[in-house]
Length: 405
Image (tube, rainbow, N blue to C red; front, side, top):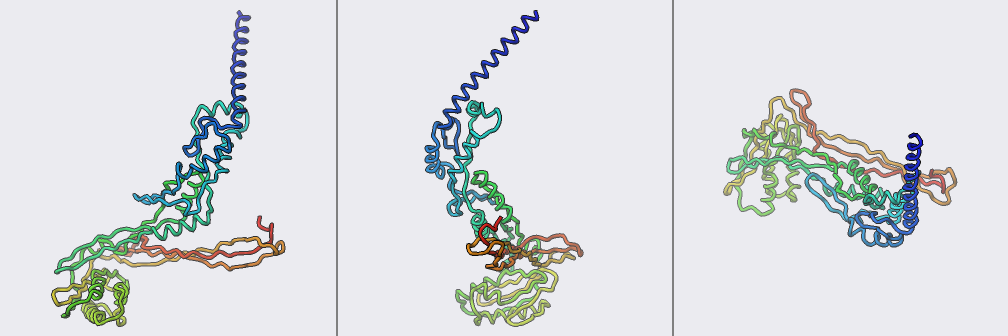
């Protein structure tokens, strides 16, 4: 009985050896063949390399990847998708590195698994992402341009007065692209051979004036009227710029801002509006600091500047805006410095160990303006209104050849 068991074990062992030997022969044969041609289920970016030599694969990918895989970057900002040609950002395909990536995956494993790799790799479909070539500094520069073009300014709530009826215009939030996070996400995608969509990180920007700040407008604090004749197009544009302006508590308002908003210089109409606004400020208890009219809203609540044209009469009103009792709304600006970085550049003729400062760096800064709200002396809101980035200049130091480690 024991003899029969030993015999069966030997038979099974021989069969196992035969199976492994057969697999080994097949693997060896396939490996030898694959040294010249790629396996049947290897593809790059959806382009099959089945049975192709290295040179054939190189030519195929070089001519087809941009059209078949992609030639564009995809950015996603909230619900909106942006498509940008990769070539505009200096991004292309590194075909040589892509071929090396394929061969490393097929041929360069360590250990016993290498022996059976040609068989195992045929048991699964492998679609490999291509390798992109790009310069990080150029991509960063282009991302900054994209930010400047795509940042959305918020829209303030407004009130328009027409025929003694108040029409409320709702506010709208804007956003500012978070440069660092968005750039990191893009670089990470490119290093993985992905063109997107890249989820662009944004900071929400609050409007300076929200609808709830002005929803209780009710009291006319000052009013002035004057008879006028036929108005020119420029004068009507001037008055439209003046109508519906909201001046928040502690904000300073200047009639010159209306001049600039209308794109006009001082005129008879500008002087007329200046006189009317001066009278309205006097009635509302607002102290005019200088002429043309400039004043600070120290009433504790938002105020509305309303301008109406009725037949041949021009009306101007300052209307009080009540928010909440014991609430203080102010605008503050904070600055964050951006320290300059250092670039080391090799230059022939400079002695080893010598350092020459070619260009002294300058610090940049980021100015962030916030809407700051206190209620009963306690801070209840601090939201971003705007963000302005002024990049610094790098310090450039020249060194001798071989000094940069």
